[in-house]
Image 1 (cartoon, rainbow, N blue to C red):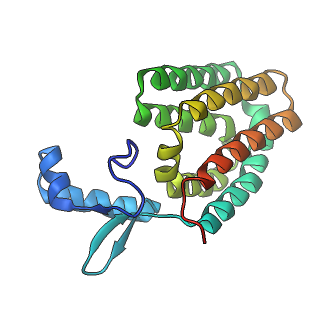
Image 2: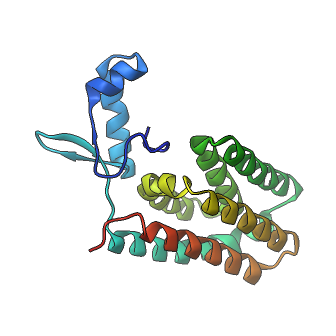
Length: 198
């Protein structure tokens, strides 16, 4: 519901309504909300309940700057390990993003986008880097879902993914980091229009 925009940043997640919509008891909904709280996607307010996390502009800027540092490092470390099998998985994830965008399936597109980026960045020798990168991605997922509601954003993302794949094929670490940075910077600019100013 967060990914599709049914629950928007700052909106309350009513446990009983979610349980009724999903046809489950309230216990698994509570557990899911606790997990989402740990991921930073919802915030618990005593005596008020859970709310979809609303990030301020300063939060977004800080998270994206930290991502720039970590993901640049991760990309340089991962590139030598990206074999033909990894490249095939990256290309499939990019295709899945395009297919989901055409179908208007934002949740599937977001999952494929994560698969694309994490396959590009994941190095078997540096698991802690990706653990932190995942935390930052989780924290901004509600905003990213809003971003992916834009046809322009989806098209720009597909084009960026193509340039990232080209840099991987060339085995060009500087080019790969530059393309990842440009892709992230464009997303950040669009996200800035969707979040609460300081």
